Length: 68
Image (cartoon, rainbow, N blue to C red; front, side, top):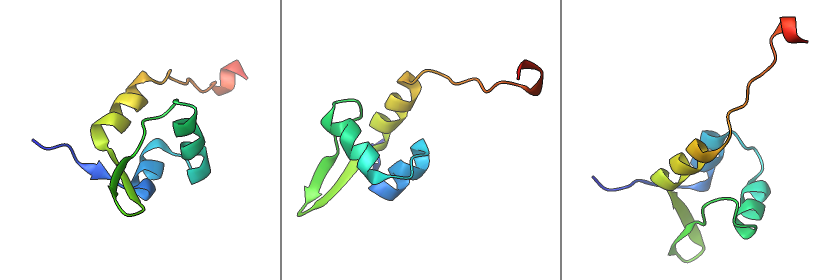
C-alpha cells in the first residue's frame, strides 16, 4: 500500500500545532521530518513519517485535580 502524502494543514491538525512557522523551525533544526517537494513551491509530508515522529515523542500526563 502506498504511503499517503499530506499537506501542511493536515500535518498541523494531526500534531496539534497552530503555527506553521513552528513546524518549519523544527525542520530547520532537524527536530521534525523534512517535507517532500511536490513541484513548484508545493510540499507535503509522508503520513508515515509524521506518525513515526509522533510515536517518538514522550507522553505527557496531565495532573489530576488530586495532584494539583
